[in-house]
Image (cartoon, rainbow, N blue to C red; front, side, top):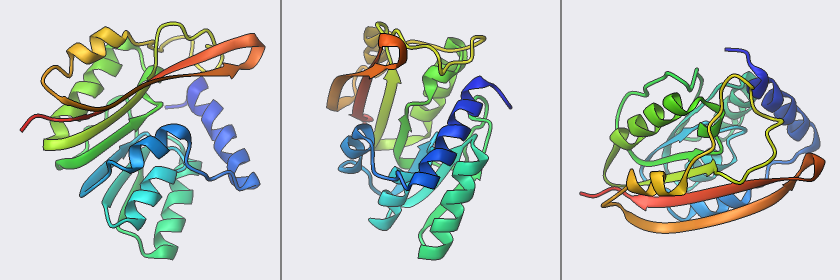
Length: 198
């Protein structure tokens, strides 16, 4: 499943581990107040949110395409005896088993082509139990930094389309955040935290 995006994050995760950069990012901080029960961290990266949730008593399944990230998570979970299972997976196609009370998908779907991103988002929504919470964070239109994307497939989302796809859900948190990126460009993120009807 090698591609430019995975290579980008493998190098970033290895650097972060060497430098001990394991703090929750702003998106994970916003999500932490909403995690409960059985949790899926889909595209967990180094697993900072997954670990924080497990330490709070959640039963966590953490999936990522990065071998470095999954090895790190497995080691920490074993050392701390946490209720956390970490697996390497092709996130473009995997369909996790079971149902979940919380699903976090932070900073992942934009690395897929739009058809794949939409299909996997719909799968995640279906895996969430009624009353469960989805934490979704994506890059949206207006982003100008594309250097971390595989040229063959990425997706910048339309906010209106995402909201239409969650019609009837209770919106718990909605925020835009912009960050400077290399070459004088900008990353524009949308974070939605919403409760599924039921």
